[in-house]
Image (cartoon, rainbow, N blue to C red; front, top):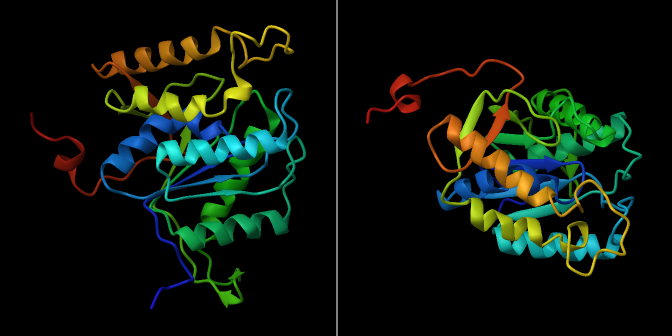
Length: 248
């Protein structure tokens, strides 16, 4: 019988807005999917305050991006674009999502960022990852009490602000495909007929080429063509030295 209490995935990627995940760690998520491991995505808001497009447009784009990327599932919450608040109710909602998907790895926005929503999302997810493991915090889904569960790893992806990554993932084989997930959000990026639209940071013609330049720079740091960088809130424990540092 199907267990409706959980929907186990290997990785769960949170973003404050639709497209955060695709822009920042999409190629890494594709690498995980290529390894046969399921990936889920949770957008905290519907991106309704974006200068370009509409909430309906962003919803359709999110569906397209999920299909292109091959996610196991995508959830879009309604915590309020430009209105995200830290509250017990919001925290419990995220705890419930983590307990439902039981991910080994969680990705989320970095704690120091240009957009306030990104920083708020980062704090919420960090706390939810911890609190999801506490037995005395009770959450329910579909009328059933959820079991405590704490993910093993939390990684912050890189957005507007550059940081010295603790981990760089070789995404040479997936970077080009990840662009399709990004371009699914076409209303947000430069198009030949978009000169009459208000210019935003990511709508500039140079933005996508800048993303590629960063991926090439990070790849160069590890001797590959493309890379995506991540940092962690604490040290990474190593159980098997040779699996982390394999022989040639």
